[in-house]
Structures are given as structure tokens and as C-alpha cells.
Length: 252
Ligand SMILES: [Zn+2]
Image (cartoon, rainbow, N blue to C red; front, side, top):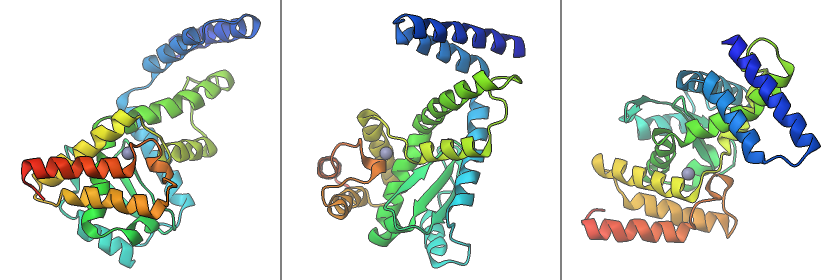
């Protein structure tokens, strides 16, 4: 394993030096990186590293204690949803004013106080459904992998004990920041919306809460879209899409 990894490092090193000398096709370099990563990182490792990165994130942020009113409220909202689509979930509130929420490949869901302050319980569940959609659809997994690809590449140059080596705390922190603010493609966002819609419908919850949460985000943003929604189709269009579908299916 080590030998294979070293070989890739040599290949990458060669590619990098060629890149410096001539204008080599960057896709070739990317292909080398892809080979490197697929050879060394398993899904279980991604989940493990995501978990470590979230631990780092939790240490850096004011996590609401179990006795906190926000924690109690979140627990009430998600009590029936400790596992979704076979993924065991753990939930925490960050007591920060940002209107944000995220979920990571290991099933950690983090909801920010600012979001809880403007949404009702049904809307919070709808947004959590969306975030979990990213996990179930492997978007979070791919985002973590892409973030790792960078740090692993840095490590590959510096470390000599395997490609992943041991990620430093600051690298884990950087990885966590990246995962928390990962921007997905529009298609990934639409798919996550659809996941939330199906999740809410399946559980007899309000699908229209998904629409009203988008409308609130639209208002709260005042034209400025929160970062975690930056690549989403615009909030009004998303809300209209949900409303049209709910009407067609005769659900609320
Ligand atoms: Zn999203």
C-alpha cells in the first residue's frame, strides 16, 4: 500500500514538474490526483475523517448544552428521525446568529441558532430533510473527498508515512470549514429538495413547510442568499416548485 502510494506521489511529482515547465493539460494532473485518491481512500475513511472534522468544528463553536432551550426544541423536532434512510444521525445546535445548517458524511447535523430563530418547527424539519438529502445522495461524501483531495495532496508532498498520514488539527479544521460551507451544484440542490419533499410526505409532515422555509430565506436574505444556499435555484422558484407539486399531488 505504502509503495503504491509512493509510486503515485512520484507520478504526481513528475506531472507537477512537467506542469511547471510546460503547459501540460491540467486534466491529466487531475486524473493523477483522482487515481491517487481512489487508491487510498475508502468510504469508511471518509466517514471517519468527516466525524473527526465535525469534532473539531464542535470544539470551535458554541454548542448548545443538553439543557439549553434550543437543544430541547431541536430534539423535539427530530425525535422521530434518529435514523433516516439507514443513516444514524446526531444533532447539535450552534449558538451563533448565522442563518445556516449543514450535515456531513458521517451523519452529523448542525443547526445554527439564527436559522432556528426565523423558522418554525416544521420548516426546520424541512431544512434538515434537505441537508440529509445531501448526505443520502452522497453529495456530502463527495464534498469531503474533494476537500481531502487538497489536504491529502499537500500531505503527499510533505509526509512520508502514507498519503493520508495523520491530518493535523488545523487541516481537520480547514476540512470542517469546507464541509460546512460546501457549495453543491444546482442539480444536487434540486435533488436534495426532492429528497426533503419525499421525506416529509412519507412521514405525514407538511411539505408546504419546505416552500415557506424558502420564502422566509428569501425575505431574511433581502436579496443576499445565505452561503449554504448560494448555488441553489432562487428561493422563490424553489418555493413555487414545491407548491405546484403539492397542489398536483393534493398534499399539504
Ligand atoms: Zn443544499
